[in-house]
Length: 180
Length: 311
Image 1: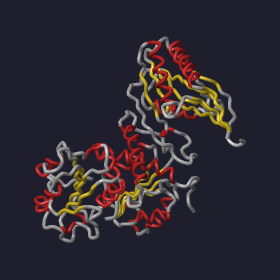
Image 2 (image 1 turned 60 degrees about the vertical axis):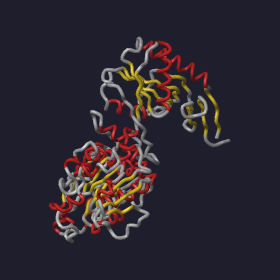
Image 3 (image 1 turned 180 degrees about the vertical axis):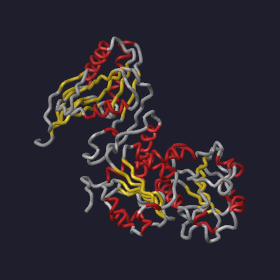
């Protein structure tokens, strides 16, 4: 197994600052914006974006977390059902601009499930997508509005986003199985 | 997890904890405007009730529908069973429709275990004779945990007809595995033989039994199973054993009172206790839905993959 570090703590902080600026620019501020992180790492990224936006604009953007286990399309294909985590949706999402946040965009199936889950809470005026890493290999017609870094990968590689919230340090690794 | 939920006796504490944690997420779903998730879309459940039941059957049916499962209700008096079909043939016939879940209630203990051996579907025991009623115990544990924040170390009393109660048996297994201290309170005639004192303390006086308890579970006097003269009359039973608000005064000040339903007011419980601030009886009903959704969700995963209609 080969592990190669692609981004360190400083890279990630700079990327998140840029993404926060892009979100504010595109939405002409933060009026009606709500940031929704997908469990688990997406929730951490969402909270960090909220912190960055507070530094830039001086406002607290609404934040929520979404567990998509109940909406997955691969329940019958997985060895075990995913561990169900708490969805916390403290706000009314009707007519809000939702920024959906995940750590890695891969096949797009998680995002599809997340949009289905959001629809059960209401009808946002718009859903935008922000991801820290886009690694390609989409299986659905989904693209991100805000991308931290494009990292072309092969299918045999894996991207691991480690964040201090549940790891020792912030970093992004590419891991290749096999040939040591 | 196994593919079936037949009893709590053979469940592990880890399985129980997993079900309770998962149920907590389903409870959130039930508080939304749209109370349905697509999780088990395309799956089919059969509710096979050989005994009358309103709340358990309704609860299972609603849990299935909230998960987008297709539901077939098998009403026994109008089915081929009334024409003399064996249970084996009934199950095999039902299974030929391509069923994923069989929810079974039967007056004979052990029927769910029998069905699990002849069927590839996930079998859920919804009450078998005087043996067990596992989902009731799970929803009771969920309710206690929700109210008290924990189960380990709590003093929990079960009052009433322990002998005929499958709810009591499942609860004793469940709460014991989760570390509660259990006390059984009943007349001598309604305590089953063979309960060891390391399993539960046994009291034959309701007032001293209730003293200091954190949780009190009242059990229904099962008039349909009372042919042996276990007590003289329901009036006398109420006088000596009925749970009243006055008697609750002996318990811990923040005691919660539970009842699996349906209640016989004025027999095992007085209205002033059933409707008091201590009562969590209505929460039990809501939680039953969340717990049954969690059980269906978790068992669905435990069935062998590539499950086909059996020949």
